[in-house]
Length: 173
Image (cartoon, rainbow, N blue to C red):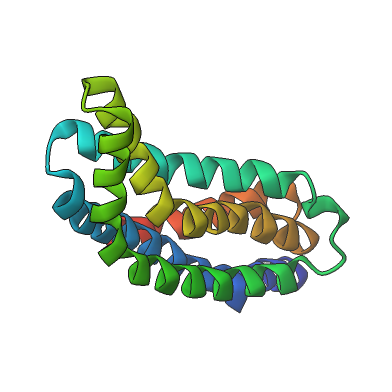
């Protein structure tokens, strides 16, 4: 019984607990980027859909890209820590790019036209410039942490714990 308690305690380590604030942060980023980009692209449902698609695409693509190399890492927690730092850095870069996005959007509209389809593609392109790099890293963090947690508790509990902590953080965000 004492050994079972130790196993459960080992599962709830600082790396796992840090994933809750990452879930919180990712939702805050999504809302903040959506509000900031609505100043560039307008507040239509189509602009919102483009921004949401760019964010979700980034998270999904980041997870898929990380899945290809995560099992070969000797120290996934180091990659996880580097990823957290990269999210912060890329978010600062994204913030610094925001003043340039209205000009980029207008250049795309001038170049490719203002049809409904081209406007949507231009909106997706602008949203991707701001959101995609940090979202890719946010997506990669899930498989990195899941891999690191697998050593302590096995695959199913590890993925469940990571998902649980991220969901709580996201709900609070």
